[in-house]
Image (tube, rainbow, N blue to C red; front, side, top):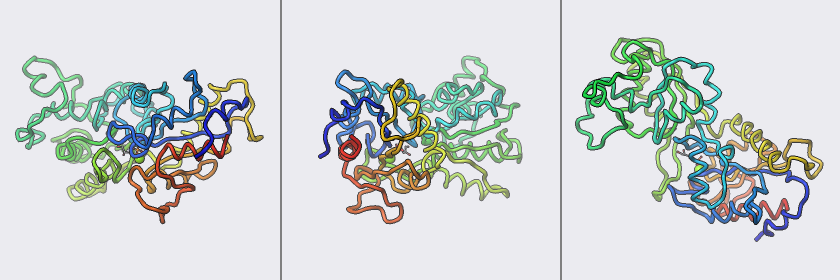
Length: 357
Ligand code: G3P
Ligand code: MG
């Protein structure tokens, strides 16, 4: 076991290391903390609850605005997490606002995809639930579904004589953003094929494909069920396969999220801001250059995503692989070997603190 954080607490200078935590399969499974995550995270705070070691959550998941996720994580882990410490797969979408300023866009996925995009500054957003509900009969299987899709739905618009918020029958969809894991795959495949094949106006013949973005490309991830669940990458494969069968021009798309090295660069910049916020007047340890970490640890469970991302990003990133999620091997992953393999996130923190403090 490593020495406890109290040894770091004595250090007057700011730490020369930072930590990025994956969420699903490292910190949580479903909504349950795993691997001693609450105690592991608490070791990064001083006794009075102030943050001591710079860290953030770097997840390919999402579906709610970052401030909401920060609150949820604070409650689950028993510490005060700030919105700046939450980086979702979709967080970089905020950099695309200018490109789609007054354009109608459709946001796809579980949770509150349209609120996420609206909070980033996109002005004309409809969730795929809302958008689909405006097109009568667009989903021929809807009458067979025993669940009710998000509000407002088509009947609400018609019976209450409400008007759809935008003229979706005239105005083309200019961009599609898959924010989080899609819920109703069947309908979403159908409606996305409609939007993307017709130039953004379902039911109107063929047209140029509007841009399509995925916030991550995880084939599988670890949720509450014992074996992995199909993720956004699986949905992307399904959409691409179907789209390419019904169109002459192949689907074009951009995927964000780990293992893209740009995600790691962005996380390093955020960690630098966090450490400067905690230690505004102190000097970095170990003679490292100002604003730079000598090591940033990524603690992840998915070799193909988390560890591969660190391999692509290079120094100062260093990878720690846990056995609480997608990876369950005894040794290391043969294809994407981690710098360190441990059982749990709490073990990872012990090793890091022992080395650094
Ligand atoms: O849907 C979430 C999943 O794709 C991965 O989340 O936290 O393991 O990066 P995470
Ligand atoms: Mg994970």
